[in-house]
Image 1 (cartoon, rainbow over the protein chains, first blue to last red):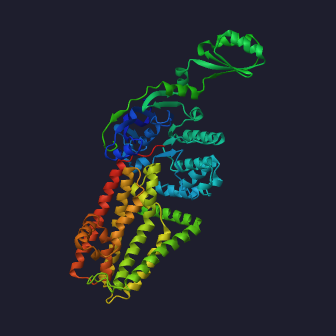
Image 2 (image 1 turned 180 degrees about the vertical axis):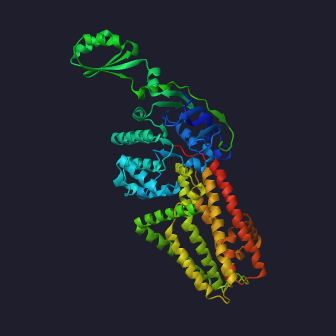
Image 3 (image 1 turned 135 degrees about the vertical axis):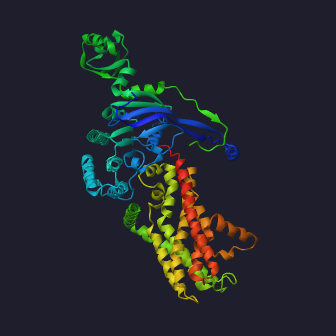
Length: 345
Length: 272
């Protein structure tokens, strides 16, 4: 699924290596380390190929240290690659052309970009100046965004007095004021409660549909993915492990479904155990893992014994599928080197 | 250019709003800064109780010397107001990855990093410096000629440019090293040399130090040349340091710009 219609992001063989120095333990080793340090090359990204079309909402998934954020930093021109090419909106990101930087936005859930001691309205004003937004357009966009997120009352309050969820909503407003064509979101819902998460999902979905914004989202929350993304890219150890639709990931990487039964009594539980399917009894509930192809045959057999109040059939949770995918990825080798060189660019 | 001035105006306005939010802190900063300056002035007054001149035949008697001190105060006040608060924040920005947010803005990164904070409390020093300059110039044997008045502001700007370039070089070192908490200390040590007349750097140790601080890191030109132009009679010999200071300021700006760009290209960012 790497070829996209009208691609706004085009990446080929993109790689980023870092040379990291080992810090030896103990005083003597530390003193020796002043004169001779051993280092190794860590391949944060190993030759990634990807195309993303205009208006796509792509989830970038992977365990910690997989290379997701490095990928976003390369696409936004914050760092330069060791190898490979990338074009975003027709620009090479790390050339940092103003015309390119005016057309995208990056929101990092763990970093604050608003002025901490001042109301967000002051940061918005500064944003207007930096991005040269026409005053009428600025007022219209700001009002629309703050109303959508229900934060109008908060923009005159110092940012340091706001909750994490409120701050993130205002960060999103700031990021969208200049109406970017591409939006990079790095864990935007981290640490937020379910209500704030839901509000942000609704908001992002609306903005992406209305404005045809191309969005790349990194997250560890599968609720974000399920709510927003049709396409999923899984990165592990700096490589793309999977690139396809969310529906396909479930079909391709699971062989069974989860059948949950609310039972009336212990007799019903005994009946299930006698049938011999993989079954877990949790109080009045029984959870069965049944082969997807056999659901239609198994269900009547299970219900025939009686004593079942309710039944539900669901796919394996996305978290479980993705965790299994992460675990199945082969570990990457790291190149050891005794060199005392600078970090590779 | 007008866009950058307008953005700087917005930064300055936001900083003023912030300072006014924490008024007690602002007043305390002004008082601390003025207190430190008053102690320095008292120290120099004490020195002049024992000697009529700093070094025989140097021309730095009491009134010219206080014009020298005032010039240093004005230059430092400009640097402290416009650039130092941003420079002090840079180490933290690099260490925490906050620099990422700067690099995605459609604006010159050097401008954003070096001028996004304005410390209005340091302006108090500049105002006292202007007052001291007026006081000392009124007590000179000969008032400064019109040409000195014309060149003096240009040389003040050159001094600011040299110090600004030094800040940018230190900022580049911070970006390359990922952490450079001694940035402010190093700045203090190196600029310390500029606070005294160049004539005190003499003898077997002082001579090489004077040469290094004039031709390698032109820190001795920052205050000495404008102060000499305004406080001492202009002669044919005065024009070489003037030309040298203008040249050094331009060269410093260009070199620091190149070093900064090169450091940004090697920026590694912090892990999230």
